[in-house]
Length: 335
Ligand code: GTP
Ligand code: MG
Image 1: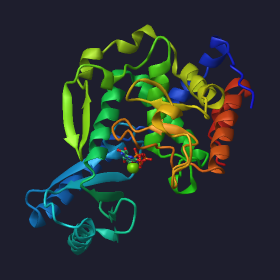
Image 2 (image 1 turned 180 degrees about the vertical axis):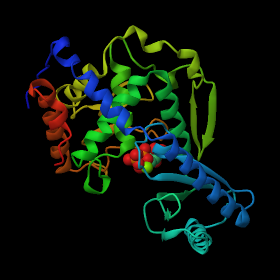
Image 3 (image 1 turned 90 degrees about the vertical axis):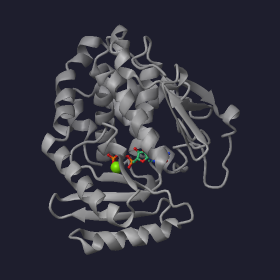
Image 4 (image 1 turned 45 degrees about the vertical axis):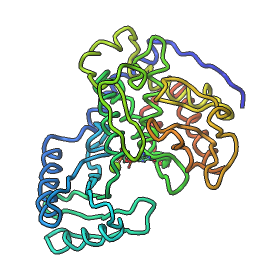
């Protein structure tokens, strides 16, 4: 592959602002849907508190990190202190409790990497996954939500990227492509790297929020309302940023040497992370450092086949953004 840095005429690309913003608007969940999600959470809280009065339920994932498109599943974390309880036992017990209420399709998946209870609420039609004590996910959900409040272009870009990834079939971790969480981190990284930057690096700023979860210290600046005009020095439009994002992942990222790191707001080397070779199932073919679990590469699911698929998709998207007279149609074409 030849690294070719492409450029584009601003007036050409800017005619795409209107259609991109229209796609973004069409994906935002309605207030009605949000209300239904809260209603389901209230029902679950009622059921759970009968069995575990001290337990807490937290929303995490896309229904709480502000990157959720309409009709997303609801991710819930049950935080329960009982230290000597086995997670699988809790899952089975929880499934039992929920089953006996009017919920449908309650399934306990005790053998999954993250054991969960899956269910569907017939009243609201919402599907929901409940995990146990996955507090780091609750904290990284807050980090993403806080980033989203700094500059609205992050949410717009991430919606478009997620929509593209789902349409193109590259948002399937079990097939070796990336999670939604990974795509949002890629967007944050990209916006931290623009000059002038659209986003700051919250973990490099003064600590205003700090928790320690499973021996991982999570600390960052969370008073984002004080950063109101941070991104204003950068006047790039959403169309320019979508173009830039695909161009970056198609032609500018060094897949052999680089690790993207939202935590440091920079690019680290695979060398310094010791991510240069395959260890177990971690192949490190595209490296995205988790902001808190820093030994955790969100690209670990990518294998030698799926990396090709991913890179070809980035190149396809970059090519369409550059040359296609009607990119919005082609970009999101079902694969
Ligand atoms: P959609 O459901 O596709 O809209 O997106 P989502 O944001 O819910 O994403 P996903 O299902 O990928 O993940 C749900 C949440 O789990 C994320 O928002 C993270 O908080 C957390 N999560 C997912 N994958 C990982 C991971 O590999 N490591 C950690 N620490 N958290 C993860
Ligand atoms: Mg989800």
